[in-house]
Amino acid sequence: MNHRDAFSHLSGESLYVDDIALPAHCLHAAVVTSPVANGTLLEVDIESALSMPGVKTILRARDIPGLNQIGDILPDERLLTEHHLNFIGKAVALVLADTSTQAHAAAANVHLRYETHAAIFTARDAYHQHSTFGDERQFRKGDCKTAFEQAAWSVSGQVDTQAQEHLYFETQTALAIPHDGTRLKIFCASQNPS
Image (cartoon, rainbow, N blue to C red):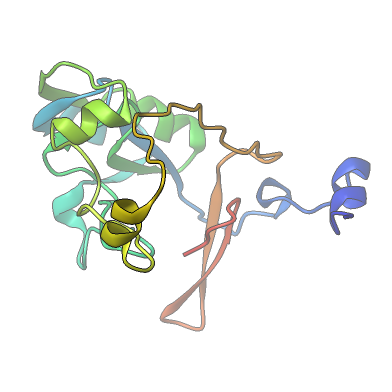
């Protein structure tokens, strides 16, 4: 099966977000992320970062006017963490500045105070420690109990396999441009734009 964009990707003809000309007065964002795999966020100190050159504002969970929620199918993931730091790289705050360099410098100057907890390394351990996203769900079809009771053989145990995330050609980025007064036109490097 041929990938419809393969030739344009390989020939350099594909248009990526970074190829789009930035509008005048465009602000750049940098994400402040969790440095720990498991912890409790106690404080986000933005004062020194706010006074840095070019910084316009720093957004935290409490600054989101609507729901702090990005779970697409189920509401099970916050955009910016409020309390629980559940992986290294979890978004805590967003710095907006005149340039990308200024935004990243200020993000590095946001100070987080947190308690560190023991890291959780497997899905099985996360389940036993009640450290999962969303509510537990089970998928069943038919009468499972009767099927197992009537089966000639039943095997139980556990199986472990390694997950593989797909590879992006384009780095994670997005460009939001005001459109028609109250709307945004968003270009993003994602297969899940919602």
